[in-house]
Length: 211
Image (tube, rainbow, N blue to C red; front, side, top):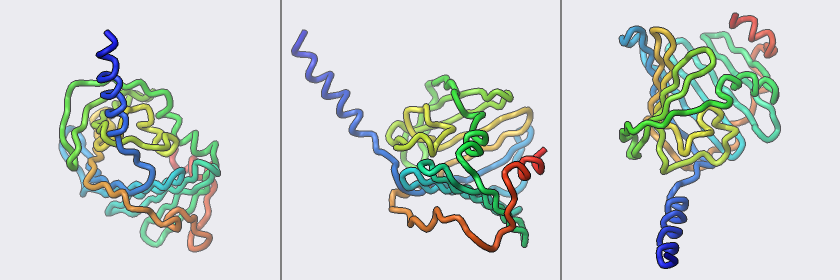
């Protein structure tokens, strides 16, 4: 029996080493929205930048741009909304960040056998359901993992990085599909919060506007 232990142990270690850690870099997504299976409006672009515990995500569409910046170590960040000439900054603290991502906490994924290839990586499928009945469907690759799960609260429990994910509620579905990933260093200035040029709106005030 002992002669089989070494090969099995080596295989397990090799599999672990083969998974690349995404501690810094940029990943870009194409974002499509469907109603009753038909695409509506033009596609948007989403970009996520990570540098250790720093996160910057951008959503750019024909309507405008939304940028979210957060430092998971210091527990500080902001949401920047640019709609035409209107520019709004909403400061975030750790409690705000937790509340914003609360719906993704304790997600239990069901792992399926479906697989596809995205930007050169084999991806497996997993599904989950949010408390508001939104169905989350994810294709993730085991070849890459996020080093800091705090910056990837939606998919931190998956054994890999999400390269395609969709949210379906009722007759509407929004699909994010990775178009590129880059492991080059991200300038720390990308995570700076502007101190001028924006009208400041408190987090509580911004919540009233979403009701």
